[in-house]
Image 1 (cartoon, one colour):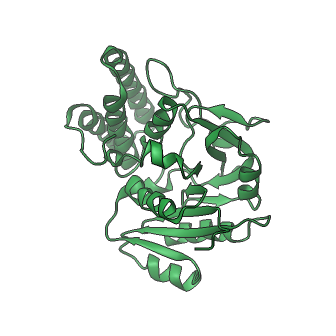
Image 2: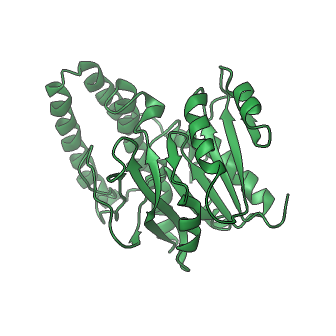
Length: 301
């Protein structure tokens, strides 16, 4: 590898070549004289994804997994690849995003000296003036980052330090993975792995920052068919149970469990209004599986 390359970008694909094509194209002509390489991680796609990528991007390497390892397993392949390459920075990027032409340059130019991880502003694809995700700090008892569901946010004017940043686009100093480790694969295939990882960063004294001047545009929940679908509600409910059981202390358990029951009731009413009965059933099945089934053993930290 060229020793001048300071940044590797990893984009995960699973049977979504059109989304991934759009994401990669937005990265090919970034402003500034940056030395970076793009890698597509194909998570065992069963369509023609790999063929399409090879035809469209002959100079971009496709790292192929034999099966779908979920977001965590797929991105862990990229993290390990970056560690072996010895690059200074690693960018983990969702394939349902489009990068502003100045995104990379703005991130690197504004990377705080004490930061381990930074994220660009995650703007709606349809409304590019508003953030669809923001970030925040962990509640000291509930271990949750409290906010309004399905909310939108006006971007802050300045760089913000947060304990949690959603994992749509994480730019991380590669050396951080040596201490914090990989993403935890118990959260297969998606959701709550970013909360878990940011909590681990917090416990180890690392800092994370939102840089809203850097922009990506996000097509919300495309990987699970959209918000409030049965699959999305199941995974959110199940993985929240995994997350809290993994990270809470005994004295926090009654507070967290009661809070999650309340959250489940709230979501039930929301979905009832929309007459979304299948999502209600999926949510409570996920709640039961997340809280009362044995935790998976994969990469448990």
